[in-house]
Length: 157
Image (cartoon, rainbow, N blue to C red):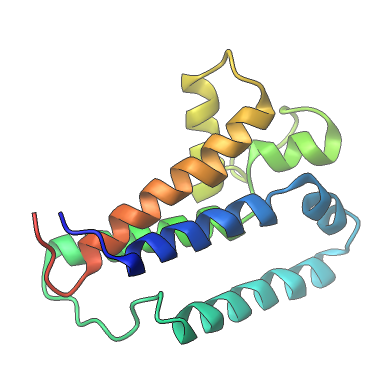
């Protein structure tokens, strides 16, 4: 596999977004908003970040998908993006209410919800704060990096 600066930059950017948009200060800010206000901010984040990522040539709008491997890579990049910005995980529940319990499992059936659940289940000896770093920092970085490599015009192995 050939990893370029573009894939690393995308992975670092999405990882930083994951840590920022799931940080306690941001989640507590979003928690006091009504659904329409929160939705407007969430969609503003989506629009602004996709716009910035495309101007920095970090998203792959111009690639013509020619293989299943590239499709899988694009899916991984999309997964990492929503892992970074979704805000539907037990971590959000923990930051805003102080407990990991009490939310519908349907609410958690998202990229970030499933990832946080899996990481916290596999490493129950770690604190929720460590699960936050592993999920939104480390795992987001790995998924975005792998996705960027696989979605490249001519993936090399």
